[in-house]
Image (cartoon, rainbow, N blue to C red; front, side):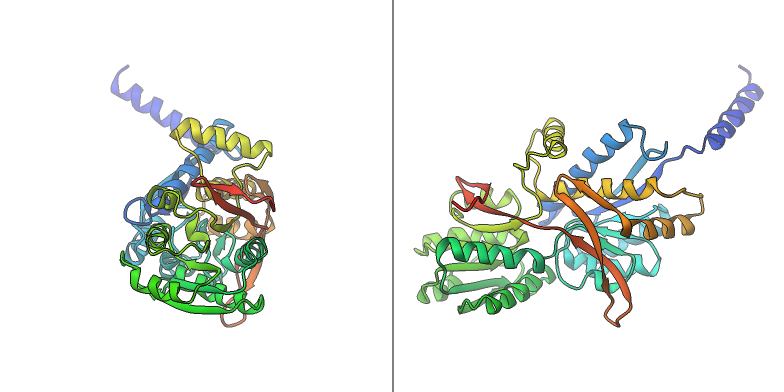
Length: 384
């Protein structure tokens, strides 16, 4: 074929592609793929990958394949802002999933909201995130919905009369978790013997735990990320503290057991996902994840998997025009009406108010599962 024929062929091919209307739907994924929060971010990315392969194998959405534009925001606020700006203004994605940590969403969420681009959190559970504006969504169940059930279940199981509390006071997630724990303990009339704090990066918790031991609590309430929690558990046992732990969403990582081994036996924690959920959609997800990654999925990969399917449901109900601003608004307007049953069970959104009383973003409306740690594993609590 001579050069002029090649050019004509390419022009015709491009024209036909344009007439078909088929084009990739670019969706940004901003997750912590390195650094301390990678224990969550990598699992989240993996959940998205399983979902996108499943959707695209079935033809995508309305004939359009989904393309994930994945960036590492490193679990850092400044990097999350930079990644959001790149995805929105340079890569021109339709919307963004992420970032991983609540701290990062508090920093980067306003960037998306100002650009009228959906930012959809799958792991942010701190209070106040969706209050920031109407383009912020999440399917991660808030601590304020999970912790009351977790504490009440643990209290009944162990006959808890008093607890000690320890939390990280310089992180939005762990501080918010503490605020919820404090209210829950007050509401459930469980006295606190002492409240101890630490800062990010601490590895020696013996001083705080020594104070806790003196008060002889029936349980230790811990609003911590998994690595910190694991070290706290190990050091608590070395000091002779035998009380069980009650944890927040940060506990939901295999890192807890990689470090603590069996030190966390008897710990209670809530989660929006149960690996033993017998529903076919969950069994298929678990099998697909294991086949692809030779590892067990966790809550964070499950929530990411469901999140992409929630967006796919919304996309099926709209016709993308090719005008980026209009299409971003269309997905924003379609998402709130989605009702979906996925691997985390029945799901829908509920709208919140912004801090000045206007219509804000959207939180998850979903019931949690309760786990107890047995044999170094999360086991669905059955009341026995």
